[in-house]
Image 1 (tube, one colour):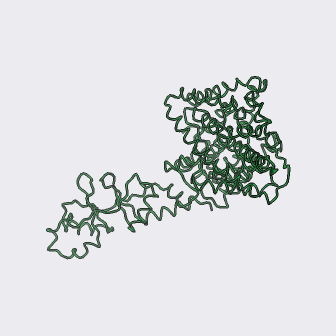
Image 2: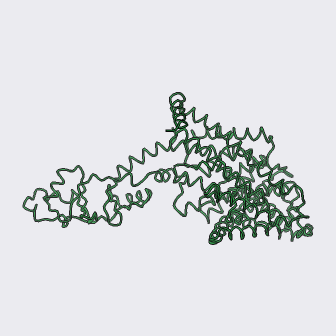
Image 3: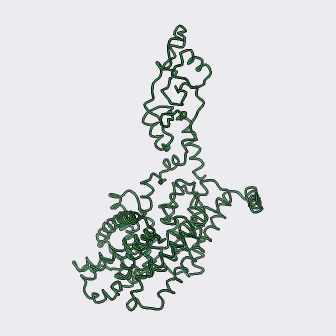
Length: 592
């Protein structure tokens, strides 16, 4: 054992002996929150630095051709960093966290504490049409996971610290502590009890404090309500909810489809070139697609939404409402393509910013259409705000996150009713067609998702092979009744598997079926076991997961099921053992 490991073990032993577990969790959640806040601050400044170095010296209108090559260069540098330095997949940060919770005991690799920040700053800084939020969430979650493992915490506490890191990351990058907590509960975490909230609160508040201290107390996207909300306009927000629900459906399915098309390109160099050029052309045509898009949202909030047409191609269309609507529709359509081209070709980033961007443009787009047709006088910036909540609710299947994040990052607290209405309607709309969010769909298709359903979560954590019992008296197919009676006298079981010399299971004998023959001594040598056995209708394969095994117990009504691997006998699994293990896992999983 190295000196550093000995020192660490001494620290862990001292902690266990001197600091009560719950108090230590509070302390660790504070540290994780502070580190996540610092990480969010570093990433913000990295992206800002790269963007300023690249674009601070020219105007879009004058040198827009540079936007054709910047995204390609950024993705190229990102791919080099990931392929030759990190040598691991960094894409789909939130899905990666969900996978770690589901399949890897919440263990995230140490390099995730920094690799996503570096990679995403290259991608986004050079104009990749993605957001920085998923990379920072992965960074925060990895900080929580690795610190928890260093201090040898068990699974439920490692998972809690993963959640603390994620909450701190969202809180830090958005100055939004409530949204950080709600996101963690609604999108990331397993079923959680109230006791989990205190560490999450500590982490979120400490990360927000770091952000406030260095970046000030201002909101990310200042929203000024032009006119108050009137209840008679609620119908328009219901329409907006339906619209963003279907737009979220398009976002989810188009993203999956485009990623598959890019994945079919086997050469990573060719895939990079195709994605980079597609992105460059789209950014050249629609400059608002460059980067995260928050500056475009601010233009809409400030009543300058037509400035989204500030490009050599569309600048002459600003006075034509119909052409404005046409360009906005193009931005909505091609934002998904630009985002997918960025990530599928090797760029690193998330969907938070694209979702907020599309929501704001969608609200502006719909309000402009309604005002044009009905002269309704709807406030376009208010609809943009509600559209952001609706898109988040639809794409992430997180209506509460949509409401609270939108309110916190804009200061639009006086607009809660429209936010709630739009978010709820959008969520209900997309759930009618798509049961999984863009985060969970990939995992659900592979059966690798732990949902918010605690029963399924506990079953996922149970390992079927560890429940197999082998202390059964095995009989040969040619054995006699005498051999069976002898086995019965030695066994405390009431099942007797019949297995040949090669390990193949031919059937089994139940004690209840032969108890009348036990006293028929004249039949001991004439009756064969193979005449008494039967092949079970229900059995378990070692490749089955515990959820499937539980279904078989429920369907069959049996108390014991044989485990058979391609005809080979491995043992039995009993309902009693499964229940005992289930209870123990549930207790380990749940916080006191």
